[in-house]
Length: 120
Image (cartoon, rainbow, N blue to C red; front, side, top):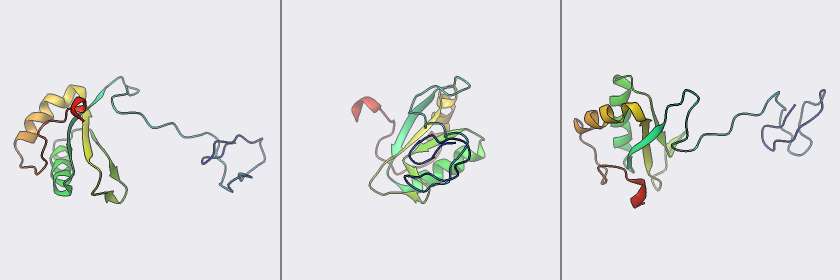
């Protein structure tokens, strides 16, 4: 048994963490992957662009969802998006060329046409 908040391991029979009071779980959740980390199916995610414009995020979502393309918007929160932080579009490396071509067909408000992590 493990505490999902602090990671403390407990003997069988315990149900709550003595330190923080959380309900114990059988296994700890996996650590989140970092950008460009290989996934279990050995597909690499690559950054294509970043934006601070919420309407861009909506347009990108609608386009990629309609095309059935797998993507991740890093920086987006559960409640949407914080205006001070950019959102980075990550796609599968093998889909990057196709996504670049699709993005040329929509008008976006972001200032950087291509995300270049070396220029950050």
